[in-house]
Image (cartoon, rainbow over all chains, first blue to last red):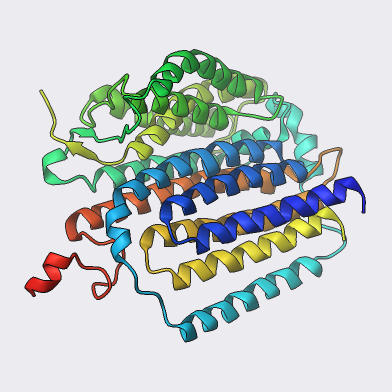
Length: 314
Length: 112
């Protein structure tokens, strides 16, 4: 067995082990830690599948931000979860295991019987890419060929923020989210929160700017910036803004609003919704990406911070 | 067997593992984690199809790859909303599951 194949096998087994651990372990805190390691291993799998952009998104969002959300929830639910001792009966678990094995086997059969020649849009994407002025085909798909998906994805982000905010208790409405910062007194986190953000900000902007031609992009860059802001907040060096702040609400919709405006303008200038005029595609994409980055960074961090729970101050 | 197929089988197993957790685990936080595993398994199957569509000098078909990135973001939004719902439910009712029989604070149970 070659070293390469051994690595692939080991990686696959580790992914399955981390996934099983995060389902089977008793304590939710360890399940969350299992899920974070699972996400990082998955990022390695995406690298093996030659999908570097996806690997970046998986590591940053799938593992990092989701992990942070889950850890916060696990901490708050610890006492309540300890009271839950009832398990489904052995019979029920056996039936569930059988059904799930059946489904997995059916999917595995589908994977094994995929046709030899896979239909692919890679050729079409590469041929049309020069018209967008971008060099990274994945970014070309996200920002030009399937821009509608990306626009709707931003709308989903804002809508889920509206959903999270609507869960505020009456007292906290329009106030400040209560982000846990359990390590604020410890020396390490405030130190990191003072030294890392300038580098992180630079790296985030680099990912966005470079994403036009290399792996990366506005989304991955925005996640890094969101993480830096969360680091500052969790170290207790800054306060989560009040939900009522007007700048916050404007920034939260700036990205999709610009995207939509450019899309509508495309109807007049280029003849179709979300179409870019031939010579200005790259500059228009950058024009969308900058406010989009602001919106994404802000909304991601606010989704982690949760609904406003502290009463608003004048 | 080539590595791409190996990861395809891995994706299939992940869907199975996640679904099992979703069905058998009473705690809602664990259901959310399990559901994320199901989603991630589906993304991986998508990634395998993308890798098989490698063409024109690219390592994979960029269209499904872009869709997976969008999917990861939407999954995060849905998870954030689900966790906010769960924490609110916990705040109002004190529980961590949807089943009142297994999951009511002691004081509450003795008074009724």
